[in-house]
Image 1 (cartoon, rainbow, N blue to C red):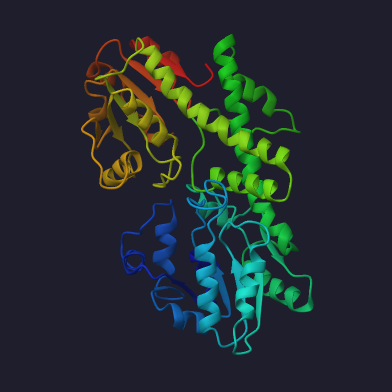
Image 2 (image 1 turned 180 degrees about the horizontal axis):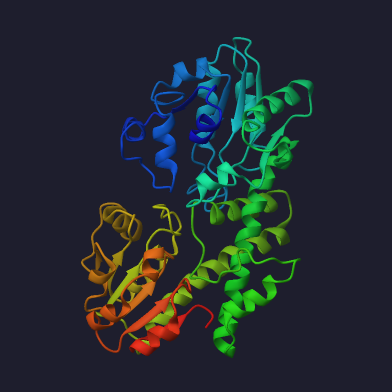
Length: 437
């Protein structure tokens, strides 16, 4: 919404939420999320044509186009628990729009949702008794956290799906016109509603599959003496494969990949395709195994036990340049190490300490063996091992000679993102391990 406001100053954009504290944060000098470049965009347009409000009903009535951007978490209860998408917030928004709207509206699905969700939204909106006309479009988001502003300025594509009717085509064109303020027309793809809804799930599934595939080969590299970076570079030169998403690591995280793959697997099973479902579920199983394998290598390298040993975990966000910790590999690694009775010390440059504790231990719980510090050097002091779990650029710039002096000996480094020069670290005296090396 901030980017639309920036690129289309003639369009009034209002972001609404019932969470008063969150809206207050968006109206403050400290935004509630960290995303490089976003602060400047928001401050440039806020109060002009970008507004943040808790006036949900008034905003719905005034709007011509309504983007639905609520959470669609994985269900934790009932049928489909652990796999299906929980659509209660989507349904709640649809009911609110149906209750309040008194004119024709274009409703845009921005949340990641299962195929055919638009049917639910349309059915609820059709119950509006005031004769209002609605068109439901699918416009999934393909930006990546950490590079979201750049991704929005120059997207690979903008996908818009709608009904193949005169009214549906007109609604699609209205949204095309919004993006056409800055996106070249040949990058705006229009499809039917169901193709657009499915494309988001499939795109994330394919990207995650590449990560799990290269991670599976990283284990084989470690067993045979091959180097995963060399293997990835070699196969990435094949134009049919390409180099992207072939970076071996401790595992993928984030709000989308695991959730969307499990949702896709559930849909396949629901539509009578159990073999397809099992195939996609295996991508998630491989990712979970990679996280466990990383923690197990730490334990085995430290002579079979990390009990009462200090392990410094550098990085907690699921990737660099974001403070998002959803499904972060660091959560699983920290839990596994705590389960081995290690003293785990975490440092991340953007994730608050209370969020780290909540993600690892659960809300309101404490464990004296988990601590959060304010620098990598503080984390390394007295540590038996360092585990790099997030690829923050600042970790590449650390004074490892100083860190070596601070640590217990022998000093171990486990690079879960393959961002460090292991040869130079070994020359300093470190015992090192990377992924697939």
